Amino acid sequence: MLASYIPILIFIVIALSLPIVGLAVGWLVRPSKPNATKLMPYECGVDPESDSRDRFSVRFYIIAILFVVFDVETIFLFPWAIIYNQLPIFLFIEMVVFLGILIVGYFYVWKKGALEWV
Amino acid sequence: MIENLIIYFLIPFIKIGAIVLILSGAIAYLTLLERKLIAHIQVRLGPMRVGWHGLLQPIADGLKFVLKEDIVPSKADALIFTLAPMISLIPAFVVFSVVPFGPPGMFEGLLRGILSRFLESASVERIVSNPIASGGFVTDINIAVLFVLSVSSVGILGVILGGWASNSKYPLLGALRSSAQMVSYEVAMGFAIISVLLYAGSLSLVEIVQQQQAGGWWYFFIQPVAFFLLLVCGMAETNRLPFDLPEAETELVGGFHTEYSGFRFSLFFLAEYANMITVSALAVTLFWGGWLPPFPNVPWLGFLGIIPPVAWFLIKVFLILYLFIWVRGTLPRFRFDQLMNYGWKVFLPIALGHVILYAAILAI
Image (cartoon, rainbow over all chains, first blue to last red; front, side, top):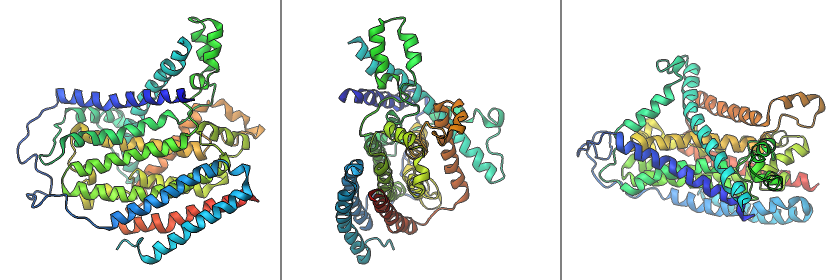
């Protein structure tokens, strides 16, 4: 079975060669006349005041944490869905318990305001 | 030995070469199709100068991308700045290694005809009977759906790295937005796919299509809501309007690729269109029966079998791409708080409820 992954490796190599060849060809033919103004970070024509890697909103971190929680839950459901037809009743009850815990957490997060953006 | 080389290297190599060429051409002309369609929706003509009705426009664009100066801003991280567009383009292509565009055994006759000139009949039969060699797909792995989900998530990294490596304010904001957005919609997308898996009982995309053939109904007719969820989440994942906040021109200049120019920019551009095709192909495979004609088991619709399976697949992918462009031409962009609200407070509960509902129906 492992042999069926060989074509994927070949595909990755071919896909990798496309942008590399393109960049190499472009490097040979395109002009290159840099100057200080041209290489400045774009800020609507104003000289940049500070470093751009500044602090940003904490909400992005909250979303990232929520994503990890929910995505791990989805991953648990994949094998469950595959064998569902073999043991429907048992697996349904089990899943309701499992998702019930998730849903309680979901409404807790909602009430706490973690899903509010403004 | 020689048989294995042919099965696992030579034939996949030819198939992959063909797919990459066709995909590149499709992406190039998808950009033209989009410009023409949007133009006609807005009662304009669109590109008309290069070739008949602008038919050579993609080639001219491609040439120009290669010939333009490629600027690396002085404060940028040069290595990651170059790697990021590649990281976002390559996964969009690699996903096609598991997407079936034709039934198993599609190339059986062709292969037998060619190989029997060079090999003995015993080894020809061994090659032809292997599904990877004769099937209408590059390879068939038993975790294909997970593979598609994980590989296409790698593409997000390219966007984030590109925005970060630019070391400029607009790209950084664009990258942050796109990571938050893609991450929010991926959860709902996962749930939408799980409700298909409940019925299919397999992660192999080939087998999912075969299940739809055996059942006689495309999963679209059984689970239209899941299809809608997948489509909307796909639009959000590919940064298409109405979800194109990461590159919202009116707020963020160009979003995560503001600092990109020349060929590196074109890689991001290609990646977006390649991702559109990927999402459409995935939606077609999961919900519209891949290479199957509509209602494959209804006898009096048998005449639809005249159109070859690959053509059915391509027609359906084209229809979904058309829908993508149509939506872009019709709907305005969301605000960012609306976008996050829809993702977490509307689509996630719907998707979750959908899974539970269909599991309950199956259990009864």
